[in-house]
Length: 457
Image (cartoon, rainbow, N blue to C red; front, side, top):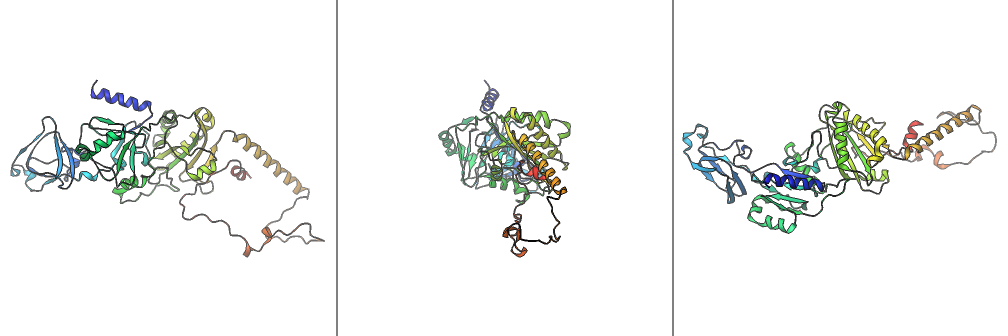
């Protein structure tokens, strides 16, 4: 069996354990123009200079003619078949007549926590991952290119980077002791650096409902690496009341659907349903979707009253001008859950939309099995009470007056008692609760048994 066959077999095993795999993208190859200061490989007769104080492994694929080479204090040049170096006078080539050396860029510039540097192997069109899940999660298989040289910074050492397995230099490491021995070897030190620790573990994701990524603790470092080209600041969202999903660094325009799931929920099956049944429709071509299991936010946990501490987060993002398509699709998904939620293993759903009206708020519980009948009964009861109040008012047995209208004079002993809570002076009245000005979110949890009834009343 060839190398390709072994890789396909390994990917099939990953699928059986519901593991995703992340591919490392950048390299330190000599023949990659992105690794040189002038964004081009050294021309014939050029002087080549590597950073003197860096460790690096460099793969050379082709033959090169150079006039001089300054090597690092510790490193290696790996020559592929037919590759090599020969001496040449720089004056014989016009491109190298300026005398400027070709500088190999800092190989330590690549960080494990940079989402730009990873690619998800099982990505499909229309799908994306929140920023925390763009770098390897604790249940992921990590693959470094076998046909390229690379160097990875493991971070400042704030915690251990834990994944399911690591494949590098043709070896797959699934045990900590084997990986530690590789990292301590010269080959490992040339490719991995920094104070952070890298560990593998037997925690395969065998839960059909999915597994939490586990990168919450390192999200600040992920965001710092992601936003470094932007000066460390998030770009302004092109909508009002922008949303920030769990695991995302910056605000987004779109909608978030949070699902409370039961034991029969299957994450991959539900993701495929959303992708092929809804997102593939022409009216939703400008949207992208991310579906994953995330820790439940405290305010949603309190409102939902569920014992589970995780939710399924569905993020719908508008990639073009904000047209409200994400909100429309979110409402379609809620209608689908109302009809098929029991078969899908979904217990309840909460939706938040960017750009929502101030009166309605961006959060509402729109589906929860067993509540529809109770809401209908409550509405009927309120209608009956309202009809009774109107009847009493017409017969004169129930009266009310407008604010500021004088009360009728009492003709005898008072028929009641003085309630200090309702009749105290305005100067003594308790202040009304004020919104928290520090919060940028106007989201709240809506209980359909009460809030919808108040809206109807």
